[in-house]
Image (cartoon, rainbow, N blue to C red; front, side, top):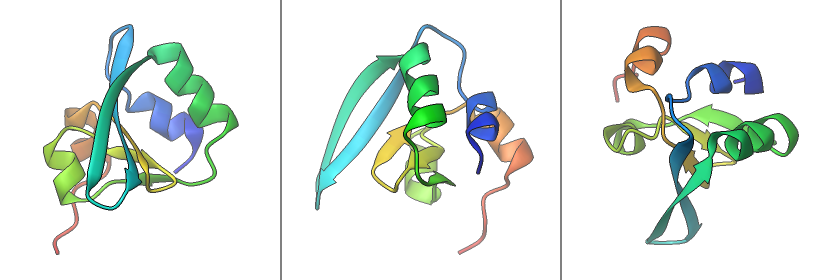
Length: 86
């Protein structure tokens, strides 16, 4: 996914919730400004992905490098990228 596609899926608001997975069985949450998330997507994301079922159930449908999960406008995500059957 391109940075532009990911930015289109961000929810409205000044702050966006994220989770980072720094180690096995560890998930840490934080909020970042919308501008910081956009900057990260545009400048330092090597691999932007649509997440799987578990992250989507937590309303975090975008992941950067498989470790940084970003809160997402799930209605728009589901319209553009329907969840795949497992």
